[in-house]
Amino acid sequence: MAAAPALWAVGRDVLWCLGLGLLLAAARDVAGILLGNGRFLCFVWDVLAFACAAVLLCGFAASASAGGGTRWYMAVGLGAGALAWHGAVSGTLHALANRLGRAVLTAAQRVQDAAAAPFVHLRRLYVTKKQTKIALKAKKSTQKVTKRKKQLQKQRKILYN
Image (cartoon, rainbow, N blue to C red; front, side, top):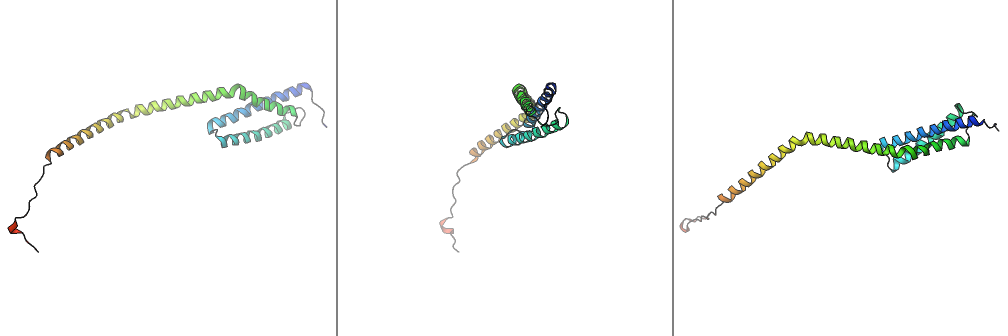
């Protein structure tokens, strides 16, 4: 069994893992915002985050920790960093992303309206002209219609085949 590292080394390891947890939670949040966060995608991001957490924890323990092995306080530090991100920054980040998305959509809608305005006016002119033509045609057609008398052949000129 390995000897316990000094208290200052434990504190350093916890701070490193806290930072790794913050970065990992930030990456998961950004992936959810940019690529979607539905049921399936949320599951995928969570599984990837847990896998990355395991790799980061083992990599940190092997390369930079004081003891050289993975310890329970490192996992706690990683989890605390992720929870700190979720509690302190995630809500603000999502609110800013929503506001930015609404601003972009509003700007795009205004540009579309400005670009389409002349064509909307031309369409209205075309529709009113077409309606007046149809109304004039209907008015003329009712005036011209007269009942025609049926012209029958005279009795003496009826021909049979």
